[in-house]
Structure formats: structure tokens, C-alpha cells
Image (tube, rainbow, N blue to C red):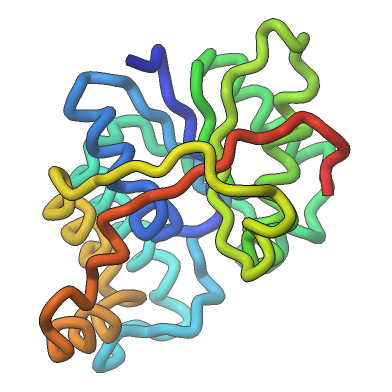
Length: 219
């Protein structure tokens, strides 16, 4: 059992694709989870399949989708930090780290989940992960929570080694798929295509991988 889990990702749906199985398993056990989502994904290219959103309505739609996904997963504490999508790497770094530090101080998590800086493909992902690491580094070493990072760049295993945690989330795959489907504007086309392929087209969702952050210079 973890005392409290803090998840910090930049976009709605980051939590559903990458870690919703793990979070659903913890939520089922009664572990409190706080999710700090930096943006509303308002610059996302997908507008639904067929389109039902536009650039003006997308932020509100994605906010509602995120709230619905959190309910499915069992996340009761959702924090929307109000940063702008696709600009995290350009934000005032101290401001971003301060915001995250304040949430860490308030929630006192035993486990933090974020992206592995430098190994998460999207600039927002990497900047988010780097800010979380900086916030944790402010704490005395003996008081730092464990940090589990999501990584999926092509070179991640060659450079940071094999994942430290490989979790089978088959027991809660229904919740994971429901959470992904909750982000309808972004995932409806993907889920329809997977359904047409049939078989085990979504088998990859049953496994979640994490790297425990090795304390060193942030990339």
C-alpha cells in the first residue's frame, strides 16, 4: 500500500493510456490519488471521429472527458493547473516547479508518477517530468518519495536500462479501456480501428512499465 500517490502529466489522456491500470488497482485498494494535469490539451489535433469539436470548444470538451476518465479510474482529487498546451517547455521553470512543489508538500505522497525527462517523445512530456524531478530534488534525500517514470522513446531501454516495474493490469483492463474511451475526442478513431482489427489489437494495454528515477543531473 502507498500512503498517497501523486500523478503529474501535462495532458488529458496521458493518465489513461499510460498508467490508468496501475491507478485503478491502487484506487481499488483505497489508496488516495491526486492527479495534477498541467493543461487541457487545447492544442490537440483530434476533434473527434467524425469531428464534433472545434478549436474554441475543445478545451471544455477535454476537461469534461478528463473528469469522466478520473471517475472511471477512481481518482477523486483532480488538479487543473491551467498551463497552456504545447508550451510547457517555454514556461517559467521556477513557477512550474513551485506549483508542483506546493502540491507535493500538501499531499505528502509516497509515490509520484510522471514522465521520464528526455525519454518521453513530446516536449511537454519531457518538460513536465523535468519539473517534477526538480521539485522532488528540493526535498532532503531521506524525505523524497519514490518517483516512477513513464518512458517510451525508441532509445529509452538502451540508455536507462530495463523498466524497474512491469505490471500486468489485465484484472482492471475494462476500467483502462473505459478511461481511454472517456477521452472520446482523442481516442474514438483509434478504438474504432482497433475494434475492426479484432483479436488482441489492444493487448499492449494490459502491461504498464515504469522506471524508478535515478537521481542524477536532470536532462
